[in-house]
Structure formats: structure tokens, C-alpha cells
Length: 280
Figure 1 (tube, helix red, strand yellow):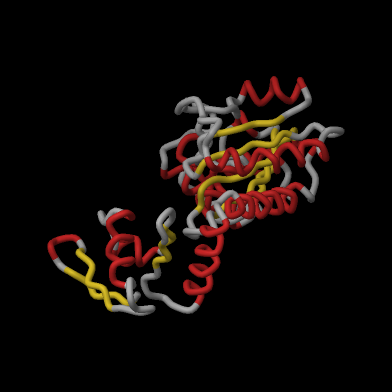
Figure 2: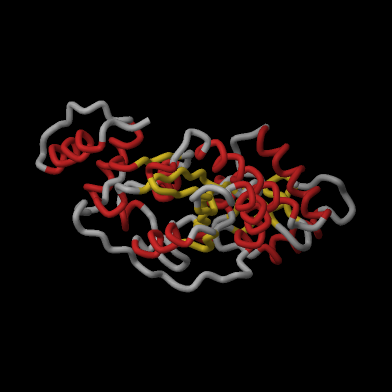
């Protein structure tokens, strides 16, 4: 899937020196290398920031753990690790059964608490998937950092179905000689399974509310809010409209407006002392 490793490193050297590369480079990797250079990163300098110990009760961790546990059984016979990150590239969880691989991951600090976004370590499947909001596979010398060129990784972003925003990424990492074409499809399937569990983790009332929200969101480009006494789902235009307006306050306004009518016009307070009339 990748060009010869020595050709790729030579191509990266040419880019760093201000030239152009004649190597057949995948557009995804070329764009990521350019971003890595814009962060003033250098291939021979590898520093991974430690953010903080992840919260084991994090909503994403709770939704992902059963998926990871199930998948690790399928990968038990091969040298493959599973890594979960949040939307910033902070590693939340890691499952790996092979001790030599575990040691290699520790050496490159691909471990809970460390941050693997592109701005920190350059081109890598986790950071690149989060940056482009699309699945990514990075093999060997396609990595920006020299320290990562012996590894292969495939990652897919995890999207919260309620908001449409990326909340993290699921990644498979292994040595280059253990990589295979199914890594990316496994990452994408796992991301979809985690997204489904994010929905199923809500109460029945919230799931019904979410279904209504998703249906309404497909039919409009304007602001859409679905709200009940416990939850609220918003699309991007609604986030801008409701900035600073608390869910509890909004629910009180909406429930009062709809107390004796199935539909109503509601005047909402919005920033700068202005107001906006919306349909309920």
C-alpha cells in the first residue's frame, strides 16, 4: 500500500528542504506531512506530551470497552494492539496481549495519558483520522516521525450520533511486517459499533428523542433542537443560536410554551441582549 520506505524518507527530506517530491505519495499522507511541517515538527525529534490519567468512567470509554474486549479476542493470535483516543488524540485505553508489542508501544509512548494528535507527533493514523474526520491508515515510512516508521496503524473517527461531532478514534497498531489490508475495515466497523453503544447507553426516552432529532436534522439546514427533561440534542446552527442558554432554562421555556398546545412560537433570549423567535 505504501511506496518503498527509503523513497518515502527521501521524499520527506525534499519537502523539508523546500523542494517538491517526485515520489508517488498518497494525497492523504502528503496533506498530513504538510500539516506536520506547519506545526514546526521535525522527523528526528519525537516528543509525546503526557496529558493526564484517563477517566475510566468516561462515557466514550464505557461505550467502547465491550467492543474492544470483543475485538481483542479476534486479534489474540496476532501481534495487534487496540487503542482508543478522545477527540484531541489523548489516549484513553489500550489493549494488547503480546508482551514484545507492549514494550514497543511503551517506547513510542502510545499509552493511556499521552497525546497522539498530528500537532504533537505528526502523521499517524489516530491524529490524521481526527484531523480529516475520516478513516486513515499509515504504514511504516508514511509516518512523519522517524520513531514511528517501524509501525503500521489504521484508525477511524468515532462520531457521536446525537451531535454529529467527532468524540474520539479507534486505532489498530502493529509492527509493519504484521500489517494487513483488513486493519482499516476493522477499525471502521469498530467505530460504528461504538457509536451504536453511545446511543444505546441512553434511556429509552432519550433514544426516542434522539431518533426524532436525527429525523428532523435530515430535513433542514436550519437550527434544530430536541429536548426533554433529561437530555438535549442540537445541530451546529442551534449551538450558535443557544450559546450560553442552559438546558434546564430552555426546557422550562419550551415545556411552558407547549403546556396546552402541541405547537407554539417561542421567543428565546440570545447573546447581546437580542431575541429569536423559534417554532416548537
